[in-house]
Amino acid sequence: MSIGIGRKVVAIAVPWVFLVAFAALYVLLALPRVRDGHPLAICLGAFVALVFVVFLVAAVTFSRDVLTSRWP
Image 1 (cartoon, rainbow, N blue to C red):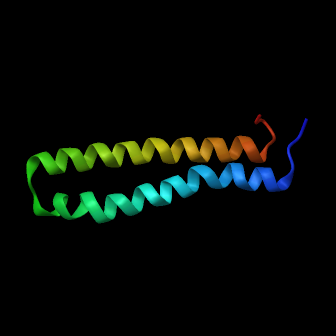
Image 2 (image 1 turned 90 degrees about the horizontal axis):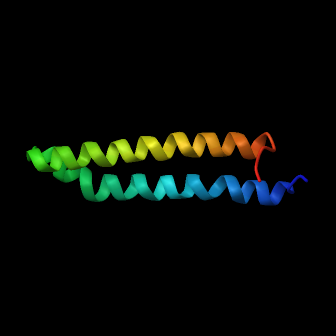
Image 3 (image 1 turned 180 degrees about the vertical axis):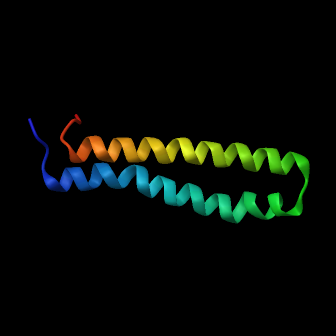
């Protein structure tokens, strides 16, 4: 059974809206502290960047699955 185009758009938008919000918070909250050069802030910033990359890969994979009707 295939889902409608409206539901596909909403399903695809959810992870991307989350990624945009996540990136905005990173730029506003973490990046200024990372630029200060404190070692703990750099490690935390690197970890947050790694989490962002993992979510980005998951969003791409999920979007591809929705578009090719492999989900749900």
